[in-house]
Length: 245
Image (cartoon, rainbow, N blue to C red; front, side):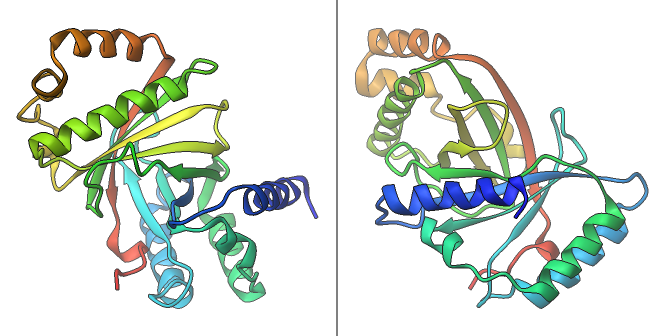
């Protein structure tokens, strides 16, 4: 067993043992940089692979192309809506693994490695499947992810109270990436038109529910809770994604 597989085994053992789950909130995924000129071949090979091994009654997967940000042009592939136990119970199929390894060897120049996430249901709002999304990763300061989650929970409550039409998913990164404590905020989109400033704005929603003083304090606390952020827009590739039931 290599170090990566051993680390994954230990992570899954700890999560299955320690974390009780009432909802399928676990997701995982990673980035792949494809050799220049092999993108079409890669998409075709993955589409065939997904049709064979990742159908509606099999292990679900999704793929998206990164449209903006430092990883523009790369592919993000993963799976979502799981219990930790699902990963521990998943059986390794040699034919599947061999086929996937051939695809990677032929097409992939560089991979980021797998990252695991837990969805924070109480901080998310009206989350849904969508053809596109903006993902913002916040590199939180030590002990400050909780502060940001508290603000997001209040924001979600304000959204409910004003019946805001937007959709947001909030995830804590459990492993992988540059550091511990990364917070991922995903805004669902139907098209690039959804990049426009929403109405009512975040400030309008907060001020209406909590008042301007509370909003100003939340902005101050938020900006003091992370060292940097990274934003990117991703678009789903349906042919490389398990169809919805």
